[in-house]
Length: 580
Ligand code: DON
Image (tube, rainbow, N blue to C red; front, side, top):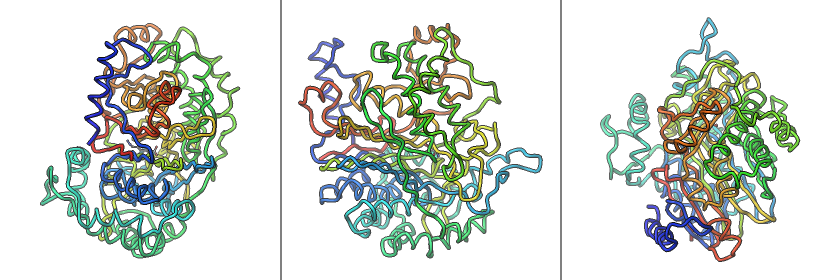
């Protein structure tokens, strides 16, 4: 699905240059997709095509984002969803920016200790596995709010492709099969899910057609009745019924009270680029901002990609920023987030002054965190012919959420409640050790790391980017931005380049295999860094991005590039960047 012809082209370019390093050389990545009028990059190729079709028929980027959001719920059920939540960052052609928060909210009956046993210890699986783990879903309200406020097309038109994909089915390709591999065991345990996503109890096979009749019915009800069909109609009733029958606490009132929040995005600049990203209840925008503000004080481009010095500075900036993330941030309706401090260049200067130039910093010693289980979220990026740009990250949290479908709805439900602090000091699914600011309260959203981001330069859109990856979303985004801005990579190279991650606790640097050379590792070890790969986490996100005006900074400066370049992470199994 992914531009193999262009891969040869980039190979040819390198050969022409005799592999000499130089400003026009490209790394060993396929070339990004190109487009003059629009670009859609998502984690499932059929959903990307749905978005492009909407753009071609004259819909704007928000129309396309809504249609892709519904379509991914059908063709990428591990993360695309109606039963989860997420964020949408929008930059309109006139430069206006806004942010829609349609993240899950804690049910009204939730309590701060709901996942602890009588002795105050976390009950294994309680916040991840069953109906008690489900937050009130926001995706349908989010899609509808986006369409009503910023779209131009009728609801029926934007949902129609998803209904068709659900009712007629779609053929499973290797990427889809790979995505199901993570969920099959869990889905098999739920009768309603197994009926849809397995055949006679066995995993679906390559080339099989996946039809989702109940999901088509739910989508049709939403097409006809809007968000009310979900929140005030039969769909809410069916989800509440399933929840009540299976130890959950969701009520009809939870659904009726759900509201999308339209928030001011986090805004800051990095080396002259203007960045808008996710505000609380995401930590992502603020934490990436804090890290970039710290790094702005160092000559990263000169220090070089992957050098021990660059890695060290990135790690120290990450360490400091994740302390703030995990201790100070939470839902803005419940917590006074230190937004001014975390975005301030003076605060970054303070952090730089605390970074030891010779030795690794030391994170506070707390219970070491363990990673585990499968994870899935999805991000898509869209830009239209007018330059309206949309970045959406939405999720069920874990792959396929709780892996259960409310009977009759075809809708998989999230396990987003695990993003709350289940107990201060106890790591969650992503090993995050968090504090009271993110404690569970009725109606509150758990703190997220999702960071749909739009970068502009001199008043024009420059980059649209986001990724899944749990807490690693933050460092995935960081490296994509740095790789383009500091290291001059094209977007595909920037996204594909191996990654490093540090999140304060556990106090170790994680790297993807081959990310750092033995020499670099030796230098880092000499300074006291513990660096290693993570055997439990093989997929580091699936970034999806768009670069405007050229394949990389050099081409943008030369002015001889195409208009839009799209890149889907090589780590994504079924995705596609499609331009036109
Ligand atoms: O909101 C968050 O930060 C998480 N629930 C995101 C989960 C995620 O990215 C899983 N994907 N790999």
